[in-house]
Image 1 (cartoon, rainbow, N blue to C red):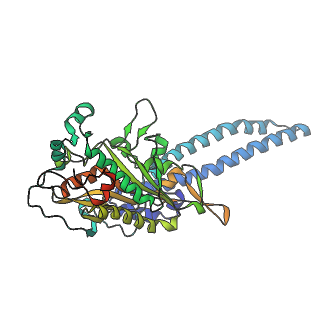
Image 2 (image 1 turned 90 degrees about the vertical axis):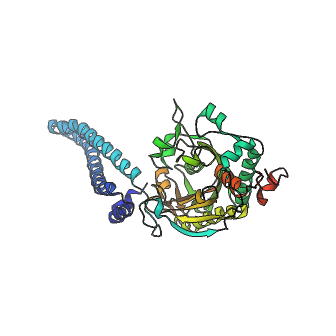
Image 3 (image 1 turned 45 degrees about the vertical axis):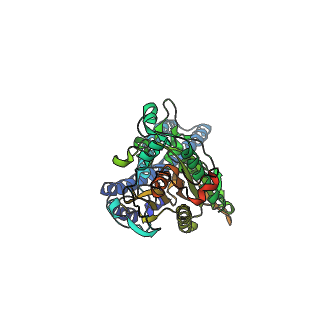
Length: 425
């Protein structure tokens, strides 16, 4: 969320940012937020004065009794103070809840390079890499091919778990694992520390890393507990250092998360319905970085470069897109997508999301870095995340881009060392 001190100092910046997002409803929130914040600070001063007066009256009553003077007025004043303090505390608590509610729902401040647009049709293409292959046969849908070859079973997955679940079988299981290890080894070689996080986290931690609307449409809640299945390893890794202070020498901290991901929402129908592209459960290797604020924009480009390298090495054509104001969501200040070429649809489809969240998550999670020159001086860290590889989407791209006329699929060269010597499925 935004730091209240930033909103106090820059209300016009916050409002202008909301206009870019075409989010007029929240513009009115800013003035109400600031009015409530001002009232909260007034109440704090008043409450502190009342408590100070309560202590003073005690001393004055003792002194008056020793002097033999009338204490009835002081006693009456003292008797009224607890109720006044309770009333101030209650109002302050109510206002604090309203202020936090506003702050948790106001979006991050966008970077100036984010294109203004109403929806995903106005995202800005930055570049393309690789040349889509020309086929002399009709490419089969990846789900159809996987089912025919016995590499996946969507019918039985749906039978026991519901639509959006599946069984992987045989060499497609090996490919899934191979892609994870390939991406993980690439990141380890760049100094990223592998992390396997818990697959469930509590709501307080989850609220620190994601848009609150995601609880209703994306997250799986565990009945009878304060726990949610993770939608990505970004979330538990982001919350890992909640309420902690980094020393400057320990940043940037580069982490490579590896986990299954669980998502209620699976998106569009059509070709995505029966296949691996939009599913409720999949494997992913994620890049995550905690850093000093002045380093985050350079690191954002680093994360994108790492993800591009993975797709270049896999030989999959792709394009990079700068996500516009109407499509970026609440948490990121800037987001790139990488979209891989899917020949069956003759279109680029999202396979990587790469975000700089600046201090937005860190403010919610209270994660700071200490100034080495001043022990008492601290500032919020910046957090960044990017997909390295979401294997279900990449397997779709491989099954279609590397498909052969006989129905076999050539395995990309960089993955073969992890495939027990296989060069094709």
